[in-house]
Amino acid sequence: MAKLARVKGKVFAGSAPLNEIGQFGSALAGTPTNTQDVATIQALSAYDEGWNSAVITSRNYPPIEEVNGVLKTISYQTCYMLQEGIPEYDIGTEYSNTSIVKSVNGTRLDFYISLQNNNVGHALSDTTYWAKATLNAGKNIGEIVTSVIPLSDSGLHLLDGTVLSDSGVYADFVNYIASIYDASLSYFTTEADWQNSVSKYGSCGKFVYDSTNNTVRLPKIVGFIEGTSGVSALGNLTQAGLPNITGNIGSFRTWTPNPWSNGAFSWSNIGTIKEFNAGHVDKVIQANFNASNSNSIYGKSSTVQPQSIKVLYYIVLANDVKNTLQVDIDEILSDLANKADVDLTNVNNTGKIFIAHSAMPSDTYIDLTLGASGSTYTAPADGYFSLGKQSSAAGQGASIFVRKPDLSDSLYGVEYHSATEQQNMKYTWAVKKGSVTGISYNLGGITNWFRFIYANGSESEAT
Image (cartoon, rainbow, N blue to C red):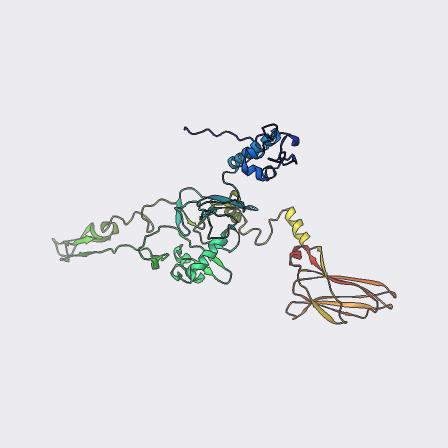
């Protein structure tokens, strides 16, 4: 059969009203059910058993609503496949060996291949039954890809010495590097040695792994890559070198010389002079040195430079299929470098409003018990302490101080006194996480409240 042309799929009875779509087998069961929901249409056992389970004997045919339901179900699933290409994972579906499904988690899109037949009910994280599909089976993590045009695949990164953290799209790569670190120390160097190599030679072919922060500094490679047959030599830098230059010169007479030379040396006659003895003319000669006489490669360039074409070197960080958003992450991170993550000077008005809003009190708070005068309290997050307490006589009040987290010094203090008896005194003061605040008071009335209010930006720290 010839290849079929791709035609836009349409759902049969997709625009039919509710009363014209029926659950298959419901009429014969005595409970005719109208529904547009595909799952409900095929929910009864009659759908598995076929037409005979829906045929009403007196009519010898199923209701037209149920025929619409069946055809809608079939065409709906077909259109779904034409639209999605690869279906989303369904925990109730039975998959066979090499079945492919996709998983959508927010903006992340991953593809998985079933490793076994009769695969049903197993989570995609179960590596006995599922494996992540690869973008290109010919590419492995750590390979170098060269290109004469910039590449934006998020599975690649320029070998430019960037430090990658264990978050976002680089998490899997950083964790992979961490897993091979102890067994493959020859691939790594220290941060100091990496910087020294780049400073001297412009390149370093080794990784730097920071186990404390779980970060990886990529190699920085410019120039030429040389092959090796030894794993232990991977990433080693071979310094530039040139062949030796040799030659010699000589003369066997003091006047009218008859010199010889070879290699990089030569002679040239630049003039003659007459000496005091008549008939004797001495020649003035000059010894010359030219490396190209020894080897023609000298003089071709001002540096050690074989013939070359410049390309971009990329390292394969991941071979998982990525979605469009993830492909753009590299460029987004590059655009943000030395900007918003440094001094926030380029934040727009929306960002400024967000930052200011983060410091404001949120709706989340915890009630505290006010201790005796002089008691101290530690801030669980950035936020505000708030106290409402009555006086029992005029002149009563409270003195509040805030110390640094290490208790070394008081940051600031406030003091309030009541003017009258039974005056409601209210105190609210800002604190940083870990700061210690103390309250000395002689207010003799009731305590209306004592609480800690989380700032909007630290609300997530509430327990």
